Amino acid sequence: MEQKNWSVVRNAVGYHRYDTPPELELLNQIYVQLRLQTSFFSPQQRLLQKHRHGATVTKKYATAKTPYQRVLADRRVPETVKIDLAGQYEQLNPAAIRRELLALQDQLLDLVRAKHPPARLPVKAPAATRASTREATKTRRRAS
Image (cartoon, rainbow, N blue to C red; front, side, top):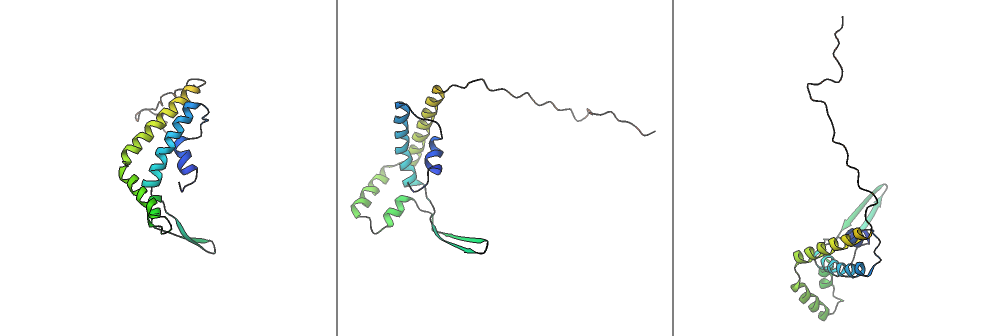
């Protein structure tokens, strides 16, 4: 994956403490789906140059491409690798990957919630009471 932890991993699984074998198994399954989604279907922009002129910073970016597209365009990558990746890409369904990823995330969150039940019930905020438009909060007084 070409991105940093927050934008991919932490965004997908959060900051909970995962320390049981079932959680580890779900994390590994999530990472497989996440790798496929990020590498084949999530385009990312690359910074080409950054120029500073006084306080103004001007940045130029390349056209957004997926890591898969970057590998196919790279001349240093052997053709056998490109053919293998193209075959894998043909077998993928982005909607199915997303559904599987969401289902695994829900299972992981259920495990965490079962491990750490809430300490107390959440307090329900009272319904807001508001005076009607004809009801004055102060009585009118006429100047005498």
